[in-house]
Image (cartoon, rainbow, N blue to C red; front, side, top):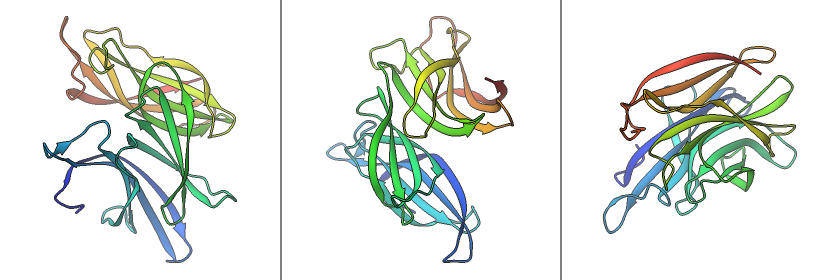
Length: 231
């Protein structure tokens, strides 16, 4: 339990590695937490989000809850990879910046789950969320949602794009993977990627349907889909 001031937790991203100190596998979960924000005592969906982490020895029971990125930074929707480096970093945690939705950021995180530094890994003039980074076919890939069609970018359409990089710290050359034209399918949300060998990968996403002339309500995804994709 994280305490009574937490309004919601979401967006889990789990890694697994062998912990030499404990002599067993360690599961590490990074996730979004939003706290009550006075005076309304509700979550501020932009500035109020935090990113936390927890650990487990079996992937079922979780403890050692710890904040990674605090409120006021706009950080949400983490995606973590294990990438131990000489600079002391163990994880790289990619996340959306709710205060600047035109960037995807990355935090270097040490073995004690402390953020060492944060930087922008991709920027555009679009509204971007739900980043996920994976390595396959000899290069790094950054997948993310792009929202279009309204002033705040959340009402009419959600597509999936992919950018590439020679390293996992800088991405470029974004291309659209799934473009939604509106009714009946207005959004494909929360891309999750599993490399499938060579230039192929499995793309998982939530599918959102809507009626003609209706606003696309991203809280009403009706199903999860898997598509086998190739570059």
